[in-house]
Amino acid sequence: MECIFCRIVKKEIPCHRVYEDDKVLAFLDINPLAKGHTLVIPKKHTYKLEDLEEEDAKALLMATYKLAPKVCSAMKSPASTIAINNGRESGQEIEHLHIHIIPRFRNDGGGPIHAIMRYRPNISREEMNRIVKQIREA
Ligand code: 5GP
Ligand code: ZN
Image 1 (cartoon, protein in one colour):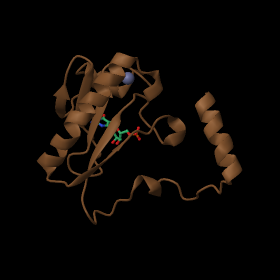
Image 2 (tube, helix red, strand yellow; image 1 turned 45 degrees about the vertical axis):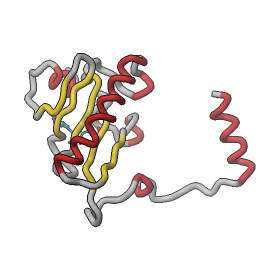
Image 3 (cartoon, protein in one colour; image 1 turned 90 degrees about the horizontal axis):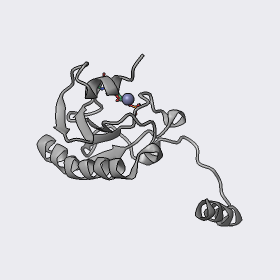
């Protein structure tokens, strides 16, 4: 079965369109975590951020950069959480890349990004040195 978000791009499934250009579509999440919860997606089917071609990545991030403050001003929210579940193991349910823009308020009952993980690893200074080396070399 074809991807739901591809079908939304093709207008086979309706959505509340917020913004559209030749590379990007933004629409309201059907099951919002807050009023104005918006999804920004590349029109071309892509699973993860790193699978995007550079031009599509630029367009996606630029659209998010421009849209996030507009969503907040429309919803009168002083803040937002902007996040990607990037891959199945991180909780991505729809396997078409999407950036969540979630308007946030003081005492809205939500948590910060740091609430994602229940446990944190204990990492020694030596291991931190190894990790930074691994990442820089990758
Ligand atoms: P994920 O967990 O993959 O990062 O989030 C997928 C998001 O897509 C969820 O917040 C879910 O509510 C939203 N979603 C799933 N199906 C549809 C749909 O058919 N239309 C819209 N507008 N949003 C959807
Ligand atoms: Zn798709």
